Structures are given as structure tokens and as C-alpha cells.
Image 1 (cartoon, rainbow, N blue to C red):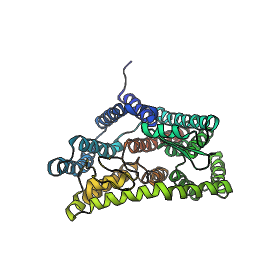
Image 2 (image 1 turned 60 degrees about the horizontal axis):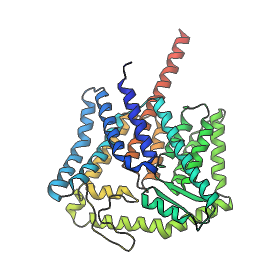
Image 3 (image 1 turned 90 degrees about the vertical axis):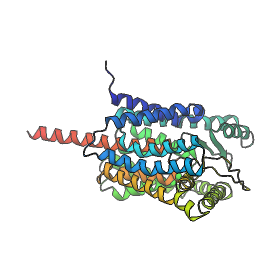
Image 4 (image 1 turned 180 degrees about the vertical axis):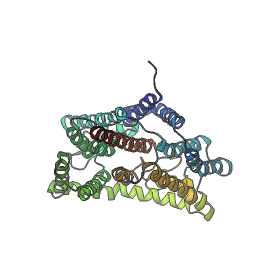
Length: 399
């Protein structure tokens, strides 16, 4: 049996999603993930049907500013070549991900692997609440941090935030599963994914979901369908729960905790990165170059040789500078409009939701971002196939 190119693309996508969501405990397999992404992109580009050199032109628009910055980074600034190559490939992969799509089978596995992440998070939470307490869980927290697997913490000893790596895709999986019919039990799956989002304890996730729910309520013209009733119920419960005393205390504690720790650390990172960028006009325009690392120590953190920040997008701006960063953003806006069209509002909203919660976290402009773009591309492709099938069925019945 001959294996088709699309089947290989689907397989590489599933491998990528598995390794992205299973960074705990398989973070050491990230090189395999990077190879899978590169192969995925190359196969998709080879499959791309090029008309009027459109794809070539788009790729040139992406590669030219990034390549200029890359040469500037290693030839003039003198950044480490390996780090420059790393960020060059990451940004190039995000731009090329718009040419990749997978089929329904791969999208189902995307959701299944996100469900696996939720089960792992739930198992950790149950273990802590069963065998540990607010004092005895601390060695486990230190162990996770030292291994680079994420963080597990609590403010009150009752609700534990399971912020392990691999949870960045849960919100997109939630929206995808609710919007298109991949499984017969999609509402049960939706609730499980929602449970995982809550367990993650990431306040940005809840803000992003609130934006999605508000959009759906505004755009929902009728509730006659089961999907409409379900959306009304889950949205109402989501917003009503915000008025419960326990939820109010949770939000207050989260904001208070972030103001003391997370927010202060974020502001410190933004401060050192922007100071580095605005040292002079040339650096402000052209950046510090791909792969640039800081040589700064503050009262909060030692930034020397660090390449991951809570607000990663500021670090990317620090590397690219204003000119190259605006070129990169302009390319992404242009290709989104060109490839997704004007009749994909739900997909655009899903992308906005991802950016809202990812921009304040360290998983924007990375492999998570690549996966999200591929999922949204495939969503449009899946939607188009369904519409074409319905039109064909109508035409056939009329004949």
C-alpha cells in the first residue's frame, strides 16, 4: 500500500502535538519535535499548488526581512550562530505554517492528545490532594521547577494550579471541539477540556474564554439547535460563577498573587528588554539581532544567557527591532487575510483568543504557535469540505 504525502504530514503533525503536550516528562525529546516540524513544513510546501507564483512571492516576503536580520545578527552584531539559527527557524516556521493543513483524523488526534494532558493534570491534582497538603507538597513543586516541567502551587491548600508545560493548546482544543463536530460525545469532551483549563490556573486562559463566549453570545442568532442551547448554558454558568464568593476569592487571590510575584517579574523583564532595545536609534530600528542574550542581573532575576521570558514577544521585538518586527507582523496579517478569506469569523476569533492568552505567556512565536496556525488552517479546510459536500448533496437532490 502506497503511503500518501498527506498521510505523512498528518503523522508528523500528530508527533509534533504529542511532543508539545508531553513536555512533561519528555522535554528531552524536543529535538525530535523540531525535526518533525521542519519535515512537516517542507512536505507541505512541496505539495503546495502554486498559481501565478503566489506562494513563492509570499515566502520571499517572509524570508527577506528575517534573512537580513539573521545576517545582521551573525555578521555585524556577532551573536551566537546556533541561537540565531534557532530563532530564525522558529520565526520562519510560524510564517510557513500557513501553507500546512491536516485532515479530520489528525484534528481528532489533536483534541485527544489535549485530553491526555488534562488527565495527567487531573492525576497530579488528585495525588496532591489525597497524599499531600499545603506544606508537604512543596518538595514536589521544587522538583517540577528544577526539571523545567512547569509549576504547581496553591494559595489556600484547596485548589492547586497545575501549570505544567504542554497546556498552552487546551483553549484552542476547547474551541475547536465546540465549533466543529469531530466526536459524537463532543459536549462531554468540551467539559473535560474546560476542567483542564480551570486546573491550569492560568488567569489569561479565563480572560480568553470570556472573550470567546461574549463573541458567541453576540453572534448567536437562534438557540433552537442543541449546540445553541449548550452554548447558552455553559456561557451563563461561566459568568454566573464569577459572582460566587469562592470564585471571587479565587480571582482576588490570583490578582494579588500575580501583583506580588508574576506581574512584578513580567514588568522587570519588559523593563530590561526595552532598555536594551532603546539604547540608541540604530538598535531600536534594527534590533539586537536574532539570538541576542542579555547580560543583566536584577533584584528579581539573572537574565544572562536567558532565551525564555514570560512575555516572549517583547524578547522577539528586542531581537528583530521595530523595522524587522513590523515586516514580520505585516506578513502574518497579509497571509492570514489571503489564505483564510473573509468568511471565517470563528477562526479569526479563535486566533485572537490564542494571541490574547499567549502574548502574556512564554508560548507565543514558538512551536505552540505553529500548531495553532496549522489547526486553524485545517479548520477552514474541513469547513470548506463540509460545505462543498452539502452543496453537492443539494444539487444532486435537485437533479
